[in-house]
Image (cartoon, rainbow, N blue to C red; front, side, top):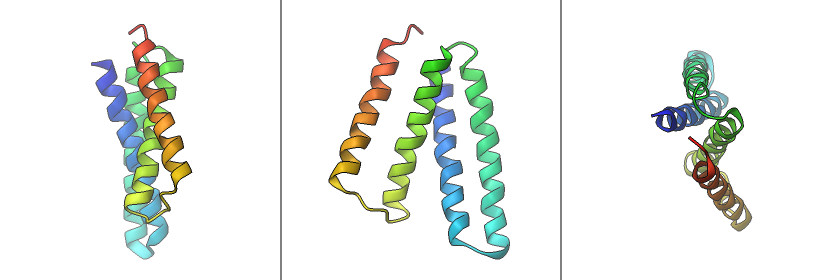
Length: 109
């Protein structure tokens, strides 16, 4: 259950990064709606991370949380914000995914 909570926290990290990207693209009231979404997603992500670290090693949990956020944000950047999907970006993204899986595999919990 702790790993599900941690993965969910990581997905909310992706959500708050997405909201930042959308806020950057908008103006006026719509921009503020995205910033509110950012704050809500941030609060949920942090709350879930706190919950997950009560039973998982902090080093592993934090690395997995940031890794999920990084991988998800790069994918959102490519898919939604039309950032380049170069060979090297995909290569390093793949190694990051492998690292996240490796940390989960060697975790004591």
